[in-house]
Amino acid sequence: MGPVLRFLVKVVLLAGVFYGVAYLLNGIEVIPNPNGPLGEPGTYLWIALVFAVVNAVVGPVLRLLSFPFVLVTLGLFLLVVNAALLGITAAITDRLQVDGFGTAIVGGLLLAIGGWIADQLTERR
Image 1: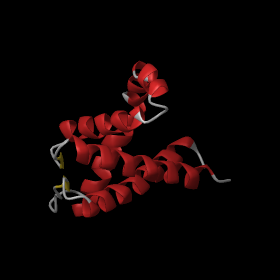
Image 2: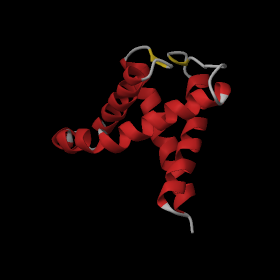
Image 3: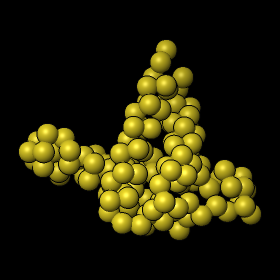
């Protein structure tokens, strides 16, 4: 599988994770756009694409800058980094709303787990 196809499959899997996170958590809301080109599922694909780009561009910078805190907290600070990435995604798109820091932490944790599963599924040969 080529890198572009792998990225697209990860975005589709992350869209499913966003659907599950929005369904499970009351504080994270996805505002679907039924008039969009792909309808309501297209909204989840759009949010997953924005999150994937934010995670790929801003994520390494935040992880590098927060490295001392990650070391001191034995990796728990990465939850805050994931929450920040989710908050940045919510700020970029008007279709995602995150209510509060605690909700962002739990949502970031669920998205990190879902992203890890997506990585494992797409890396199999």
